[in-house]
Length: 144
Ligand SMILES: [Mg+2]
Image 1 (cartoon, rainbow, N blue to C red):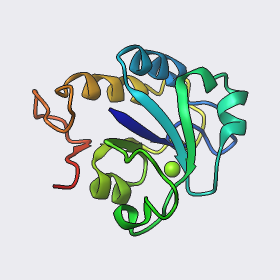
Image 2 (image 1 turned 180 degrees about the horizontal axis):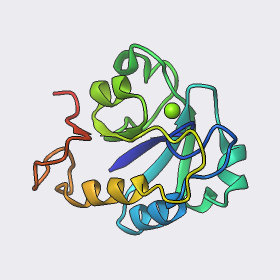
Image 3 (image 1 turned 60 degrees about the horizontal axis):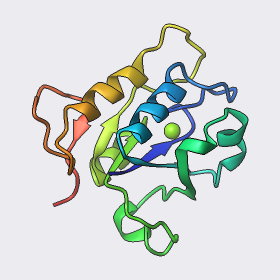
Image 4 (image 1 turned 135 degrees about the vertical axis):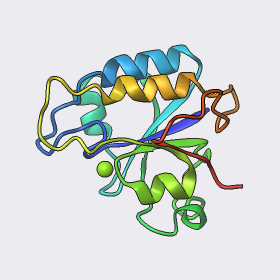
């Protein structure tokens, strides 16, 4: 799957520090054959991706639409289309399908949200959006 991952408060705290477990998540997902994209409403964030040593796991960085998500993807040059998004903002997760994470604002060494993301993704069938265990409240189906 093409997995699109938000930056601020999803993988980065307010001060730009990396959330616990992000590198391990990226390693595991690329190891499982997924393509990872990092996008952000504030622009293209290769700088932070490289600063945190994640560039070998990331296929592309994009500027993320902040509204009319579906219809603006093409005009913003976002290809391929996301199969699944990971974001702290519920609206985009509901619109595009994916996993809503708890916002990571303050640094917290005990945060285990990235492990939860991997567990949910592991429960999906290879083509996504069909949880084999349906008790995942953070998972939202993609558009029909
Ligand atoms: Mg965010």
